[in-house]
Structure formats: C-alpha cells, structure tokens
Image (cartoon, rainbow over all chains, first blue to last red; front, side):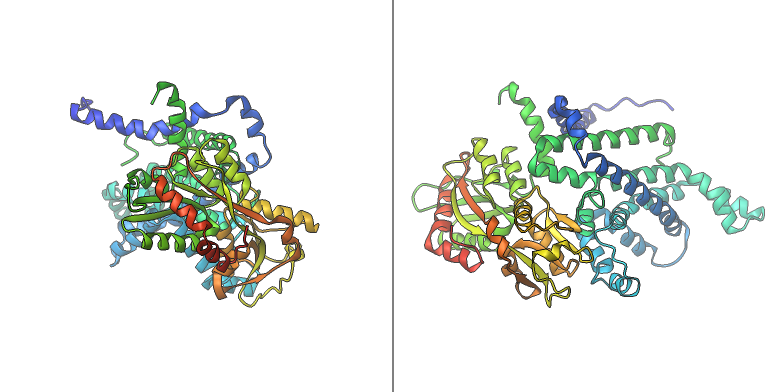
Length: 264
Length: 262
C-alpha cells in the first residue's frame, strides 16, 4: 500500500497533540535527580511496591483473559437480545471514576457487603486490605479494555472460516478453539497488553477498596502518591520507574505480537 | 518567563497533571474590586479535616459579601503543600500541622507569618455500636482486628506514630490511609473495627461513628496554622477569610466542630 503524505492542515494539531502527551513525560526525565537515583531506588519499599504491582497486574490480566475473552465472544457473536445493554454495562468501568469503582466493590465484597458479609460469616474470609483485593480492583478497572479489543477483533474476523469449519463437521467448541481463537489471537494479545498496562497504573479503586499497606496492598501508583506527600524527589524517581516499565512493555509487545494490522 | 525556567515549568507540568486537583480554576478569579469589600473568587487550600467547618465559614463570607465566591481545595495538607510549591494558584493555605506549613513558608510562598488558629487531638473512631469492643490504643496491637491508621507521610499519620511511641504500642494496622477522611470512611462503612483519626472527624461523622478518647493523645496535639499566600490572586478576600477564621465567630465555629482553641 502506498503511504499517504500527511495533509498539511493535520500536521500542526498532530504535532501539538504529541507535545501535549509527551512533554509531561519529558518533564519527568528532566527533573529526575539522577545523582540520588541509586539511593532512592534501593530505598526500602520501592522494590516491594514494584514487585507487588507487576504481580497483581499480571494476575489481573490473567483473570481478565480467562473471563473476558468468552464475554467478548458473547458480545460479538451471540444473538441473544439485550447485547447492546450488556455491552454498555460491562464497559462502564472504562468511564467510571475508579474511586467509585472502589466504593462499589466495598458494597459487594466488603465486610458489610452483600457477598462479603456472607464470605466473612461462612468462611471467615475478608477481602478488603488484602493482595486479592488489589487484583480484584485492578481486574474490575482493566478487564473492559480487553473485552473491547477482543470484541473488535472478533467482529473484524471473517466468519466464513468458522462456517467452513462447521461445514466440515467441527462442533462449536472445536471451531472456537481451532479456528476463531487463532484468528483473533493478535487482538487478544493487544487487549491483554492494554489491560496489563491499565492494571499497572490503577490507583483510585485500589486505594479505596484494597487500602494501602506496604508489602500487601501498596502498589507503585500508591507509593508514588504517598512519596509525593513527603519527598517529591522520591516520587519523581518512582514515577520514572513506572514509566520505564510501562513504555518498555508496550514497545516490546508491540514489536513482537502486535504488528501492523493487528489492531483491527 | 525566562528560558532558564523551562526546567521548572516542565516539572510543574509533570507534577501538575497528577497533583493539581482543584486549584486550576483560580486563574479565572478577579482581584477584589476597590471599595466595598472583597469580590471575585477566593481560593482556599485547606486540610481535609477542616472540610465541614471551613465550608460553613466560606458560606458565611459569601453571604456577607455580594459578588464573592469562595472555592475550596480540601486534601491532605502534604498534598496541598506540594501543589502550592508546584505553582498551584491559591489565596489562603490552612495546614493540619506545622511541618507542612513550613514547606510553603520555606519556599517563600507565604504572604505573612502563619497564625495558629486551632488545635486537634487524635481519637479512636469505631463503627456504631463498637462491635469489636475497642477501648484504647492497646487494641491497635490486636492482629485479629481490622484497623486503619493514616500513612506516616500525612500529618494524622505522623501524630499517630507519636502517640503509639508514647504509649509503647506496636500497632498492626491493615491499611495506612492517604488522608484522615479516607480512614474515617472505612469506619463508617464498617470495614475496619477502629481507626485513629482526629477528634473533629469523629464529631463530623455523627451517629455512624463512635469516639474513644485516650490519654496518650495529649502527647501529639496538632496545631493548625494558616496564612495568606504571597501570590494570592485575590489578596483582599484572602485577608477577609483569615480575619473571619481568627474572629470570635470563627473560633466558635471551630470549637463547635470539636477543635481546641490555639
């Protein structure tokens, strides 16, 4: 395909958009106290928070893939009525203020919550203030990103392959596993990366529902927020770490799995 | 703006995106017109624990002056101090402790010497009915309880560390909340059995929350200083607000909210 030359009227706003989006990141680099970097990075709690962030974001992504891919299939392929409403409902966390999500999670899974009260009485299980709560909060906020991506991929995929498989005698489950899933694998990968990155940056729902305790629930965004209260230099360094991890992941995965056309 | 300040501007942009919650609109305020008292917009940055009483005082000031709008940015004092040092425009800053006020005065941002206008002590907040039977500071060492304290980075957390040290208690909290109101909310929701908050927060929460005073609280009385800011867009209104807080009327409102006289 021939590459189009950018029409001139698009150049200026596009450049402004780049400046607006990239300049704050550059500011972080400019103001990073490089000489104290080592000391700040090895400060107690930093590694702990980073590890917790990586682990919880990965678990949240795994849960989102296991539950979200089937949901995306239902949204894209099922002929059940009310799909438009369902789609709106399951993507609400995309636009909901994360703090509201945290409160909502409390009302369901908290000690006084509808489900949480029962869990507490029957099994002595309480969810808030645990690492599980972090994963739940992150999953709640990040899963819609995966669902939207996979649904888009499913809609773009050619259903004639699936029809052909069915004609050749494959049952519906086999068709899904052997034809549909490989067909939309790049879409699933793209969605998983987005989901992981969103989970990694999650702040509002986590601090509301999971609380903040070093080693158990204090993820990097929480550590950054609290560091900003006492030591802005440390906050800049922690922000830089989060930025590097996010950018590196997005770049690596994009090159590897999300080549041209994958975003369709 | 000189080109040498680019570094500072970049940093302000970087931090401002995360930190500047409520202060942005202050740029739209107009300075008080000469003559009959303050008009325009007054922007007050105040500690979260002042939310109720300052909202009330702001309303009174608006009622007394036609054309004056008072807007508040309530948050943890340390977050506010950071926002101010990063260039957030405001007229008045009221901090929940001295050290966070010093952050602002040390940066040369204060319009005058800060005045201590109130004091506050810690209290144990428990959900209505006190289901876990919490009686004193020693209960914060009980592992089986769900407990909230403030993070050591914010004033109520610093005060909490002081009282635990004074009482010789090693606390086992389940969460270190980002500000005192967040800790209180967890009590109101019944998600924790007790939280260490200010006496005023217990008062503000009404019947949903019970308060348990404890003797060690006297070891960490928090002083609340306030000041006008040197770069206040509306200095006349800033002065009027500070005067109201320090007046008999303002002091009475603070006392009703559970604060101590300075």
